[in-house]
Structures are given as C-alpha cells and as structure tokens.
Amino acid sequence: MLTWFLLTEGDRRPALFFGTSSDRIGSPAGEQSYFLTASKHHPSRPVSAYVSLNYSEWDSDFNFPFGVEVALGEQFSIRPMYDGQRTHLTLSYQKDRHSFTLLWVWLERVGVAYSTRF
Image 1: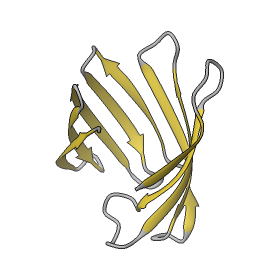
Image 2: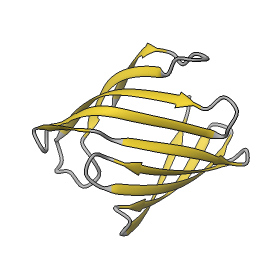
Image 3: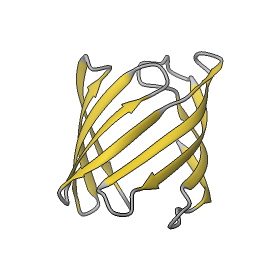
Image 4: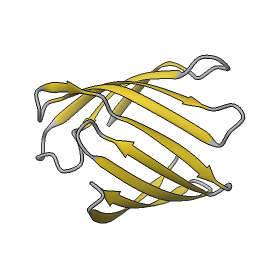
C-alpha cells in the first residue's frame, strides 16, 4: 500500500489522497487497485466519512467505495463500509500506537486485524 496526500483536511475542505494497494478483500493475489479518496471528519460529531474513485485490476473497471467511522468513546470505533462490490463492518479498539480490529467481511465471515503506527 502506498498513499500520497494531495490535500490535508481543513475546516471546510476534505483531505484528498491518491494511492495504490492490493485489490479488495477476496481478490486474487497480485491484483492491484488505484484510488483517489476524499475524507472528512465532522467538526462537532464523532463521525468521519470517506468516498473513493477506485480502479480495480481484478474487475478492469472503476468502482466507488465509501464508508463512515463512528467513534464509540475514546478507544472504540465502528465502521460500516462498501468496497465497491461488497459490504463489510469493523469494530476497532485503539490503545497508544496499536489498533485491534474485528472484521465482519462481506457480512458473512469473521476476521481480525492488528496494526501499529510508527
């Protein structure tokens, strides 16, 4: 995954970034996607949203992923999302630099993820 920030988020302006990553969950190994994404945090609510224009090598076509993250207190958040083809739901717990996520992939399968910032 590689991301270039084109614009940082401002009071009235969403963040805008371009990037590439492996294609959607469930795509064959080696398939890549390329995306242009806008995201914005609501200034008075614990909500952030994003929408993307995504080119999928797997489909050889464009799709439009989007999602919303809702903070549930200071350390938990829930994120319903649509990857351009299928729906997923995540529940995350963040502590310091670490994040643990429970995934409900395609609203059919359960998974877990761990990430860290450095």
